[in-house]
Length: 434
Ligand SMILES: C[C@H]1O[C@@H](n2cnc3c(O)ncnc32)[C@H](O)[C@@H]1O
Ligand SMILES: [Zn+2]
Image 1 (cartoon, rainbow, N blue to C red):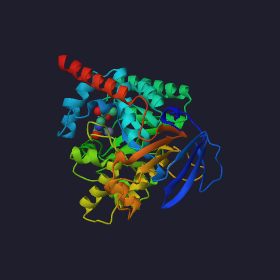
Image 2 (image 1 turned 60 degrees about the vertical axis):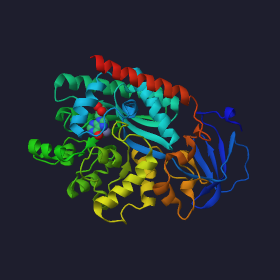
Image 3 (image 1 turned 90 degrees about the vertical axis):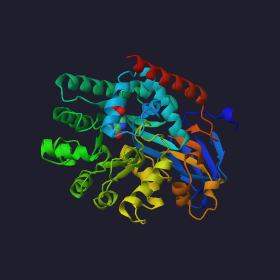
Image 4 (image 1 turned 180 degrees about the vertical axis):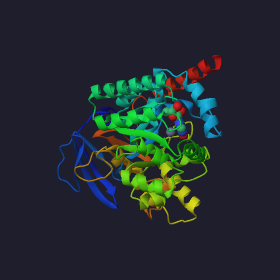
């Protein structure tokens, strides 16, 4: 099949032939967005046949914490302390954002995620109806939240509640199984207790997720104890925010009891190692304590202003290296486990139905090159993927049984780069004249 004939972003019956899975050659049959069989097959009647000889097949990656449209802010404000970075650079620029900016920023982010093997992401930002337009055009899965920031005023709280409900309605009306909605209370230092409680109650009533920043810095913990007399996780729990549908981003400063609480509630902790190192949060996520407490640990990039890319292959490596460095234990978070937090754990947290290459799972699959420098020699597949390769190793991306990238081609790439670049320049120009 030539590139022109590939029906990009359309569910098709697909036969992947001769791919390498766990060191064995295999065929994979996909129909109606689901993996139907794994293993040699004599059937040849698929709409699309991909000869994957020389490729490795693996589950697509899942980014459980990002602000996709911040791709427009890549390189805009680096090397700063988190609070100053947010209050002096990021928030003043975001005050000039438009819906079109979010559309082009999210298209750029989706392009980067697809190119580097991500098939689903958990996003918190503004103008999210336009983010949803971009996500649908890219064909990727996403859970979208309006960043709920009421700054402890009733007027702003009312506005944020309205914006959240409007986004929920907008997403429901699209009737797209790849799109879901979550409440997005930004953090305990930007959302009032009433706002947190409203988010918690709404999420129970409508069975939707919650996406929040938690214990990113020591200051957040100290301020919370000084103001409320309890640590952040206990505070959020008292307001109903810690649930099995919640993804809490960062979680660097959790103590052992808080890790236990996340385990009891089955709240996912999204580890964002690059952002934490860049913003110098000072502490790595307590991975062992979270694992001992059976709390789900997943992987995120955070936004492009604090990373500065969305490549989860790089993130898997940083996660493993940061744990080893912080604990002085080289056996912690081995490569195979890092791959699992980047794929299966994220898929479970976002309830995508994928994350595993087996019959009955969602067809969220990527093919990665085996004939490259980073895969040579091939002593250990997981080791190569986590420690040696990065997202450039990805050749083909299938999400919900639709091809989004084939042989490294993604439709409209040039146009997206041009439009996103222009949107970023115009945004900064608007800020500079204000
Ligand atoms: C949705 C809002 O969240 C802001 N944001 C981006 N990165 C971080 C972070 O690491 N901690 C807290 N808040 C963050 C983003 O700029 C939006 O304003
Ligand atoms: Zn964030």
